[in-house]
Amino acid sequence: MRFGAVPTREAAGLIAAHTVRAHDVTLRKGRPIPAEDAARLDAAGMGELVAVSLEPGDVGEDAAAGHLAARLAGPGLRTEPPFTGRCNLFTTRAGLLLIDRAGIDAVNAVDEAITVATLPAYRPVVAGEMVATVKIIPYAVAGTALDHASRIAPDAALRVAPYGRTRVGVVSTLLPGLKDATVDKTLTTLRARLAPTGAAIVADLRVPHESDAVGSAIRTVAAEGADVVVVFGASAITDRRDVIPAGIEAAGGRVDHLGMPVDPGNLLLVGRLCDVPVIGAPGCARSPKENGFDWVLHRLLAGLAVTRADIVGLGVGGLLMEIVSRPQPRSGGTPADDDA
Image (cartoon, rainbow, N blue to C red; front, side, top):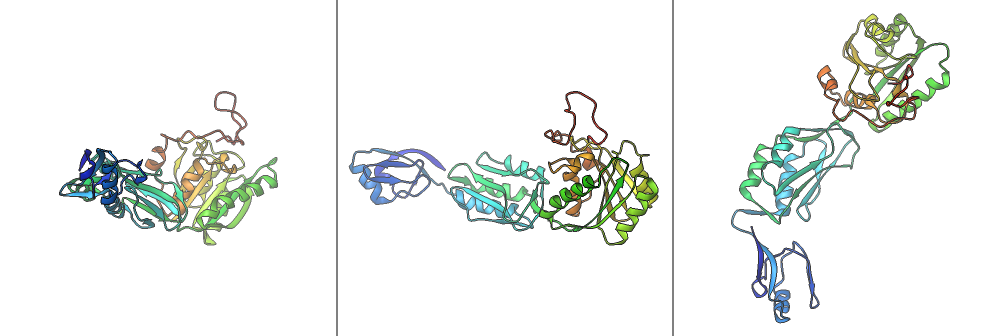
């Protein structure tokens, strides 16, 4: 691509590098310069225009952006017609945005003319949401660079994992002093969390804060068809020998991981009973504000595995804002029992 000043009389058919308004003529940035406009500007005494001309093998910005966007878009995404060197990608369904980070980084490293920007990986999305944009910086890119970027781009580098688990069973443990209204409000908050995913609460059991009672309740809601079980403890989980992990094991299940480097959300537990995931919810899950519980819940609802490696990898970016339900700030004081 050639970029620079050219004699106005020779600019017809070239691409205007900048918008020009002079002598009753308007040249639009990025648009071909009409011959009659070049002639009028030349006759009016404008001797030069900054213009762009493509060289053999160059691909225009719109065609290049559209081509690369189509290559990156996987299931659950669509592209819109490119404009001014930009092609945006939108979702066609609700779910979790999955991104091949290494693949996107590799594409962005090919040539400074080629850029891809996305939302963060694992972001919950709804249908019609913009999740990525491909932008060609100049007015054209070398075909060899575009071919290379397209070749190294992984298949479905961007895709949306649809929510597949829709039946959520809830077990709430009770202790003296825990009001029924608190449990009711917790379930109302959970329903609001589930609404964008299409999932619903199909069982609501409230049992004493005892491991045998927890185990029996987990078995019951799983047998009734829940494909995810959430346990809200009247007291926070502080050890693998505590009531809720012991209850999961009493049900015949297993505890995969306790604790996560996300705050609020530190005291979260993940386990399973056969093929049914079980979440021991941290106290902050009673709040409607985003916390680590949301991150794990959405992954499980989208049918994704949540392993120990997944959880320990959440630390960078895992310090979230304070939430109203926290009785003490992180900067000092003694946290309440259900703080995290």
